Length: 138
Image 1 (cartoon, helix red, strand yellow):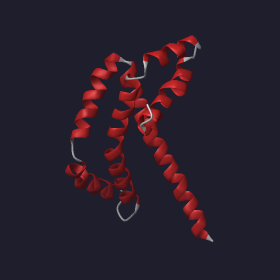
Image 2 (cartoon, one colour):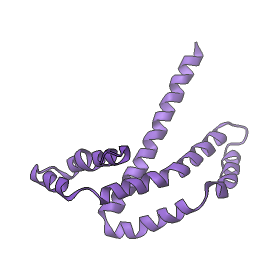
Image 3 (cartoon, one colour):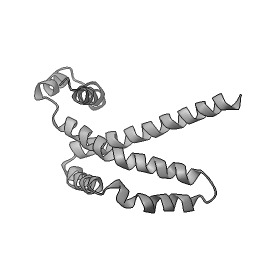
Image 4 (cartoon, helix red, strand yellow):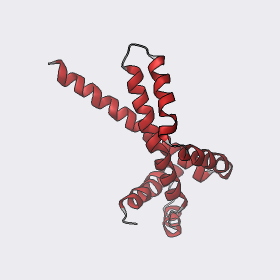
């Protein structure tokens, strides 16, 4: 009977990790797209981080996480999460940043015409525009 409960806990942990990835790329890309000063810092940093191959630092990070939790599987799990995050997060952030920078002007005018708040504009226009761009329908 413990196996289904364990599986539910694993699923909940996967959802939390996915939310963490989403929070990172949504926050990072939005900040870079909306603030010129932040863009001048965040985009070059992201470009540098993306240019470092994951295999170049994977052995150091695995060793670090395994030594952080000796004799526990938590170290291996954190190393896996770190590897997945670093292999995906940069591309997701760049992609969302680019979609925010290329929202069609007419859609922006419509959002102003409907007097959408910044939050409504983000979720109703910019985030949906990103979904359309990733599906290839824009």
